[in-house]
Image (cartoon, rainbow, N blue to C red; front, top):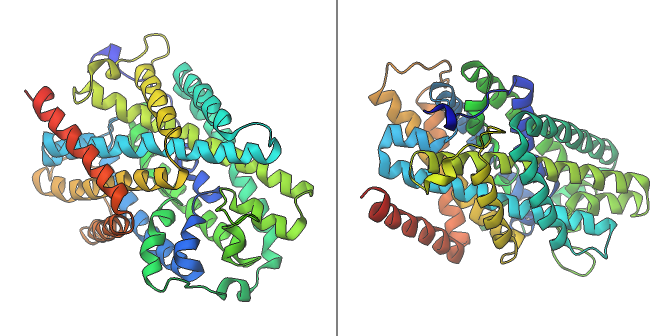
Length: 434
């Protein structure tokens, strides 16, 4: 790797924790509540439990790969090494789909939260504005971006703890059990994409491997501490939101439309929309959405950058800015594409498309763990997934089942996603491999 294409090394274990939690934490503040409409309290709870098991098992295997092969491409590099260039390309495109599509969905949530305070400002203007602002922040430098990420993540975690403290005394079993399975057990399948939204993005921590000061040790700590934090926050948020007024109260607004702000809806029932605590949680929610939006911009930039650096996408995407040592071209390209997506889709559809990319990544990543153990048994692995091969096999089975569930529940979106992979692969075979 030439010096000109080498990323700056400056991330500490604390900053990696901030990235791992920050990538994901917006999923606690918005998006997940749509799953309640599909599955009700019980259906969403079952879907979330299965997703938690999948993520715990997956992150253990992914940490093994990230420590053994600390490169910015993440699953693209792992799958290429384990399964060959063709499958590595497909895995890389799936990763780009996940990380490039997730930020527009979060930008919609940011716009919705700001609109609660300033109804005269259209949410779409806010979304485009934050895209430009945080892309520039990412271009300026990774340490500055990661420090900012840690700061807003810390505030977002504090907001969820505050929300839990306000709601814990008002939770009732009646609210949790009322109409808990409105669509039968089939609702579990429909709820899975939105249960995944609770944790989607933590795999982006692997894409920061090249910029970690000691990736062989720090990435294991980052994955473990971030996942533990997120599971605790998920339980607190889910039970606190639904327990104060039933699942319908955090899904539907007064006009009957689906809300992008479930926590303010729950608090509005308790303290009123004019209360200081209500406004404070909205502000903390903005920090959470900002943390994930900004963090996923970082991960998307690294994923696109690596695809350009190895020649799977145009080579100018793999260039490093000589002054800031950041993947500026990839970040700008992702911003332009993200804004176009933002203008043409709803948040729910974008979430599903991003989840399809994520589940494809999880399948490729877990298969790479198993394959590399066979073909490269002597590869230096600073961290070994426990209970091998059962833990990665559990992750693979659950990831495949979740992928099938999402495809069945969202047939047309699955067609769009599959078509994107197919067209990209054909272009790759015709132009890149030739």
